Image 1 (cartoon, helix red, strand yellow):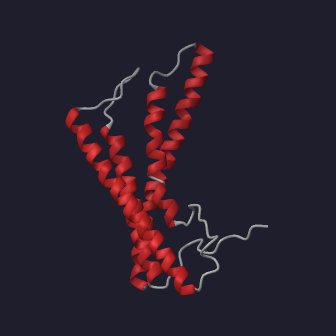
Image 2 (image 1 turned 90 degrees about the vertical axis):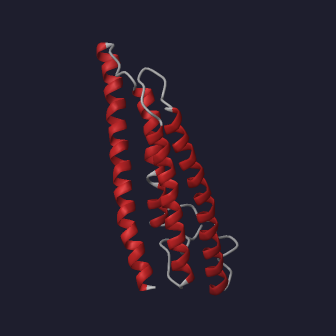
Amino acid sequence: MQYTMKVRAGFGRVLHLCGLLAGITLLAVMGLVVANVLLRYLFNMPVAGTLELTEGALPVIVFLSLAMTQYEGGHIKVVLLTRSLPDGLRRAAVVLAMLAGAGLFAWAAYAGWKLTLKSIAIGEIERGSIRYPLWPIKGVIALGMALLTIQFVIDAVLAALGGTLPDAEPEEIE
């Protein structure tokens, strides 16, 4: 289990780097939107491509953060059925849930990579006031889902070995 914890911590550093990139992207989008508003209302000169750039940045912000959220135990958990199970069954349910998540997101990552390759092959571009290729955005989406898949697998192994995942104990609802 010690080895699994080291692997999880090392992968967590990669995920925090992805989270940092998502945060920087969010900050850039915020700056772009503020600049667009100010320039539009003060000088009647909006920033060209603000809409296209912000809509392209949103998937980067979301999908680069998914695996980090799982790493930190930040996803919503419903424990209505599992909280009353004995420890062994609860652990089995967690392992099963992590493996189901890994399977779902592995499939989605595979489909995302296929769409990315197709986007490269056909030269797909964003059409609007500015143009840019769409394959990098599709690639980031696929990468984010692949990272989440890996995190689910690591968490499944950790849970199967008896380790505790972050935020494994639910908060009491009053």
